[in-house]
Length: 229
Image 1 (tube, rainbow, N blue to C red):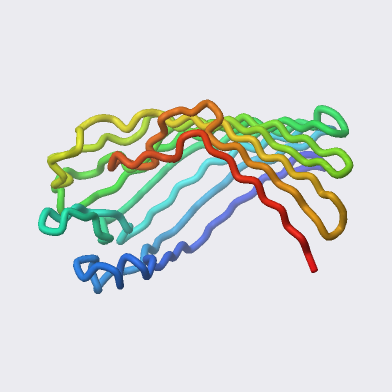
Image 2 (cartoon, rainbow, N blue to C red):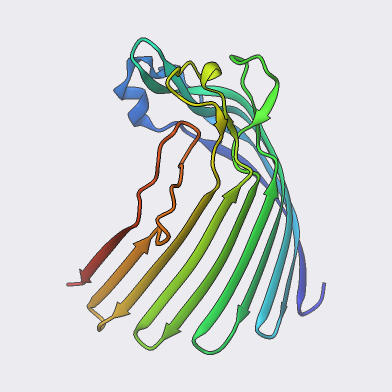
Protein backbone atom coordinates (compact mmCIF):
# COMPACT_ATOMS: atom_id res chain seq x y z
CA UNK A 1 0.00 0.00 0.00
CA UNK A 2 3.02 2.28 0.65
CA UNK A 3 6.62 1.94 1.89
CA UNK A 4 5.43 1.16 5.42
CA UNK A 5 2.13 -0.67 5.00
CA UNK A 6 1.23 -4.00 3.37
CA UNK A 7 -2.06 -5.82 2.99
CA UNK A 8 -1.90 -9.57 2.37
CA UNK A 9 -4.19 -12.52 1.65
CA UNK A 10 -3.19 -16.10 2.35
CA UNK A 11 -5.16 -19.18 1.23
CA UNK A 12 -3.77 -22.62 1.96
CA UNK A 13 -4.75 -26.25 1.68
CA UNK A 14 -4.05 -28.04 4.98
CA UNK A 15 -3.21 -31.72 5.30
CA UNK A 16 -1.87 -33.62 8.32
CA UNK A 17 -1.25 -37.33 8.67
CA UNK A 18 -1.91 -39.08 12.02
CA UNK A 19 1.16 -39.96 14.08
CA UNK A 20 2.20 -43.50 13.29
CA UNK A 21 3.04 -44.50 16.89
CA UNK A 22 -0.53 -44.46 18.32
CA UNK A 23 -1.74 -46.38 15.26
CA UNK A 24 0.80 -49.20 15.53
CA UNK A 25 1.03 -49.27 19.34
CA UNK A 26 -2.64 -49.87 20.08
CA UNK A 27 -4.87 -52.14 18.02
CA UNK A 28 -7.84 -50.09 19.23
CA UNK A 29 -6.22 -46.96 17.88
CA UNK A 30 -8.04 -47.28 14.60
CA UNK A 31 -6.19 -48.73 11.64
CA UNK A 32 -8.59 -46.84 9.35
CA UNK A 33 -7.54 -43.38 10.54
CA UNK A 34 -7.88 -40.63 7.96
CA UNK A 35 -5.67 -37.56 7.67
CA UNK A 36 -6.93 -34.15 8.73
CA UNK A 37 -7.58 -31.98 5.72
CA UNK A 38 -9.17 -28.64 4.96
CA UNK A 39 -8.60 -25.01 4.06
CA UNK A 40 -7.03 -22.01 5.81
CA UNK A 41 -7.89 -18.40 4.93
CA UNK A 42 -6.09 -15.33 6.30
CA UNK A 43 -6.00 -11.64 5.53
CA UNK A 44 -4.29 -8.86 7.41
CA UNK A 45 -2.29 -5.65 7.58
CA UNK A 46 1.40 -5.20 8.37
CA UNK A 47 2.78 -1.80 9.34
CA UNK A 48 6.45 -0.98 10.01
CA UNK A 49 7.73 2.45 11.02
CA UNK A 50 11.16 3.02 12.47
CA UNK A 51 11.74 0.72 15.42
CA UNK A 52 8.11 -0.42 15.60
CA UNK A 53 5.96 -2.89 13.67
CA UNK A 54 2.32 -3.96 13.96
CA UNK A 55 0.37 -6.87 12.51
CA UNK A 56 -3.38 -7.39 12.46
CA UNK A 57 -4.73 -10.64 11.01
CA UNK A 58 -8.17 -12.18 10.58
CA UNK A 59 -8.28 -15.91 9.85
CA UNK A 60 -10.65 -18.81 9.37
CA UNK A 61 -10.05 -22.52 8.99
CA UNK A 62 -12.29 -25.45 8.08
CA UNK A 63 -11.04 -28.98 8.66
CA UNK A 64 -12.55 -32.43 8.30
CA UNK A 65 -11.62 -35.68 10.06
CA UNK A 66 -9.92 -33.83 12.91
CA UNK A 67 -7.70 -36.13 14.95
CA UNK A 68 -8.32 -36.47 18.68
CA UNK A 69 -8.28 -38.83 21.64
CA UNK A 70 -11.07 -41.10 22.89
CA UNK A 71 -11.14 -43.13 26.10
CA UNK A 72 -11.66 -46.90 26.00
CA UNK A 73 -13.16 -48.41 29.16
CA UNK A 74 -11.89 -51.90 28.41
CA UNK A 75 -8.22 -50.94 28.16
CA UNK A 76 -8.49 -47.81 30.35
CA UNK A 77 -6.47 -45.94 27.77
CA UNK A 78 -6.99 -43.15 25.27
CA UNK A 79 -6.59 -43.92 21.61
CA UNK A 80 -6.45 -41.81 18.46
CA UNK A 81 -9.62 -41.37 16.40
CA UNK A 82 -11.07 -39.01 13.81
CA UNK A 83 -13.26 -36.70 15.89
CA UNK A 84 -15.19 -35.00 13.07
CA UNK A 85 -15.28 -31.51 11.57
CA UNK A 86 -13.29 -28.58 12.99
CA UNK A 87 -13.57 -24.83 12.44
CA UNK A 88 -11.92 -21.78 13.91
CA UNK A 89 -12.32 -18.06 13.27
CA UNK A 90 -10.06 -15.61 15.02
CA UNK A 91 -8.26 -12.29 15.26
CA UNK A 92 -4.54 -11.98 15.92
CA UNK A 93 -2.58 -8.89 17.01
CA UNK A 94 1.20 -8.46 17.19
CA UNK A 95 3.42 -5.55 18.21
CA UNK A 96 7.22 -5.45 18.02
CA UNK A 97 9.49 -2.66 19.19
CA UNK A 98 13.26 -2.37 19.17
CA UNK A 99 13.97 -0.67 22.53
CA UNK A 100 17.71 -0.28 21.95
CA UNK A 101 20.59 -1.95 20.15
CA UNK A 102 20.38 -4.79 22.69
CA UNK A 103 16.74 -4.99 23.78
CA UNK A 104 13.51 -5.81 21.98
CA UNK A 105 9.88 -6.12 23.08
CA UNK A 106 7.14 -8.32 21.59
CA UNK A 107 3.44 -8.27 22.50
CA UNK A 108 0.85 -10.60 21.02
CA UNK A 109 -2.76 -11.63 21.53
CA UNK A 110 -5.26 -13.81 19.72
CA UNK A 111 -9.01 -14.18 20.14
CA UNK A 112 -10.63 -17.15 18.44
CA UNK A 113 -13.51 -19.62 18.55
CA UNK A 114 -12.13 -23.15 17.93
CA UNK A 115 -14.96 -25.69 17.68
CA UNK A 116 -15.29 -29.36 16.85
CA UNK A 117 -18.36 -31.33 15.79
CA UNK A 118 -17.95 -34.85 17.13
CA UNK A 119 -20.67 -37.19 15.75
CA UNK A 120 -20.10 -39.66 18.59
CA UNK A 121 -21.25 -37.09 21.18
CA UNK A 122 -24.32 -35.91 19.26
CA UNK A 123 -23.98 -32.42 20.76
CA UNK A 124 -23.35 -30.24 17.74
CA UNK A 125 -20.46 -27.78 17.77
CA UNK A 126 -18.46 -27.61 21.03
CA UNK A 127 -15.40 -25.62 22.10
CA UNK A 128 -12.18 -27.48 21.29
CA UNK A 129 -9.35 -25.41 22.81
CA UNK A 130 -8.51 -22.05 24.40
CA UNK A 131 -10.19 -18.93 22.98
CA UNK A 132 -7.70 -16.42 24.38
CA UNK A 133 -3.91 -16.45 24.09
CA UNK A 134 -1.44 -13.68 24.97
CA UNK A 135 2.33 -13.30 24.87
CA UNK A 136 4.78 -10.80 26.35
CA UNK A 137 8.38 -11.31 25.27
CA UNK A 138 11.63 -9.49 26.03
CA UNK A 139 14.68 -10.19 23.84
CA UNK A 140 18.35 -9.40 24.50
CA UNK A 141 21.28 -9.61 22.11
CA UNK A 142 24.82 -8.34 22.59
CA UNK A 143 28.11 -9.74 21.36
CA UNK A 144 28.17 -13.41 22.40
CA UNK A 145 24.97 -13.26 24.48
CA UNK A 146 21.39 -13.88 23.45
CA UNK A 147 18.40 -14.12 25.76
CA UNK A 148 14.63 -14.26 25.81
CA UNK A 149 12.12 -13.94 28.64
CA UNK A 150 8.54 -14.80 27.67
CA UNK A 151 5.25 -14.88 29.55
CA UNK A 152 2.44 -16.86 27.91
CA UNK A 153 -1.20 -17.07 28.95
CA UNK A 154 -4.00 -19.33 27.71
CA UNK A 155 -7.48 -18.50 28.98
CA UNK A 156 -11.15 -19.29 28.37
CA UNK A 157 -10.20 -22.92 27.79
CA UNK A 158 -12.48 -25.77 26.78
CA UNK A 159 -14.85 -27.68 29.03
CA UNK A 160 -14.02 -31.25 29.92
CA UNK A 161 -17.07 -33.49 30.27
CA UNK A 162 -15.96 -36.63 32.14
CA UNK A 163 -19.21 -38.51 31.48
CA UNK A 164 -19.17 -37.84 27.74
CA UNK A 165 -15.53 -38.91 27.48
CA UNK A 166 -16.26 -42.23 29.15
CA UNK A 167 -13.55 -41.62 31.74
CA UNK A 168 -15.43 -41.77 35.03
CA UNK A 169 -12.39 -40.83 37.12
CA UNK A 170 -12.09 -37.44 35.43
CA UNK A 171 -13.61 -34.26 36.80
CA UNK A 172 -16.03 -32.24 34.66
CA UNK A 173 -14.78 -28.65 34.62
CA UNK A 174 -13.33 -25.91 32.47
CA UNK A 175 -9.63 -26.56 31.93
CA UNK A 176 -7.78 -24.05 34.18
CA UNK A 177 -5.93 -21.13 32.59
CA UNK A 178 -2.31 -21.75 31.65
CA UNK A 179 0.42 -19.33 32.75
CA UNK A 180 4.01 -20.00 31.76
CA UNK A 181 7.10 -17.83 32.27
CA UNK A 182 10.21 -19.11 30.47
CA UNK A 183 13.81 -17.88 30.23
CA UNK A 184 16.33 -18.88 27.57
CA UNK A 185 19.98 -17.78 27.62
CA UNK A 186 22.59 -18.52 24.96
CA UNK A 187 26.32 -17.81 25.27
CA UNK A 188 28.34 -18.32 22.10
CA UNK A 189 31.77 -19.13 23.49
CA UNK A 190 33.40 -19.21 20.07
CA UNK A 191 32.70 -20.51 16.58
CA UNK A 192 32.75 -24.13 17.75
CA UNK A 193 31.27 -23.99 21.26
CA UNK A 194 27.85 -22.91 22.49
CA UNK A 195 26.33 -22.93 25.98
CA UNK A 196 22.55 -22.70 26.53
CA UNK A 197 20.41 -22.51 29.64
CA UNK A 198 16.61 -22.79 29.64
CA UNK A 199 14.48 -22.30 32.76
CA UNK A 200 10.84 -23.20 32.20
CA UNK A 201 7.66 -22.56 34.19
CA UNK A 202 9.59 -20.21 36.47
CA UNK A 203 6.42 -19.33 38.39
CA UNK A 204 5.85 -23.05 39.08
CA UNK A 205 2.23 -22.68 37.98
CA UNK A 206 0.06 -25.81 37.77
CA UNK A 207 -0.49 -25.94 34.01
CA UNK A 208 -2.75 -28.47 32.31
CA UNK A 209 -1.56 -29.41 28.84
CA UNK A 210 -4.97 -30.69 27.73
CA UNK A 211 -8.52 -31.46 28.88
CA UNK A 212 -7.66 -34.92 30.22
CA UNK A 213 -5.95 -33.85 33.43
CA UNK A 214 -2.38 -34.17 32.12
CA UNK A 215 -0.09 -31.71 33.87
CA UNK A 216 2.98 -30.09 32.34
CA UNK A 217 6.27 -30.14 34.22
CA UNK A 218 6.69 -27.97 37.29
CA UNK A 219 9.62 -25.55 37.34
CA UNK A 220 12.50 -27.18 35.45
CA UNK A 221 15.67 -26.30 33.60
CA UNK A 222 17.90 -27.59 30.85
CA UNK A 223 21.61 -26.87 30.45
CA UNK A 224 23.15 -27.73 27.08
CA UNK A 225 26.70 -27.53 25.79
CA UNK A 226 27.30 -27.98 22.06
CA UNK A 227 30.63 -28.48 20.33
CA UNK A 228 30.91 -28.51 16.55
CA UNK A 229 33.72 -30.60 15.08
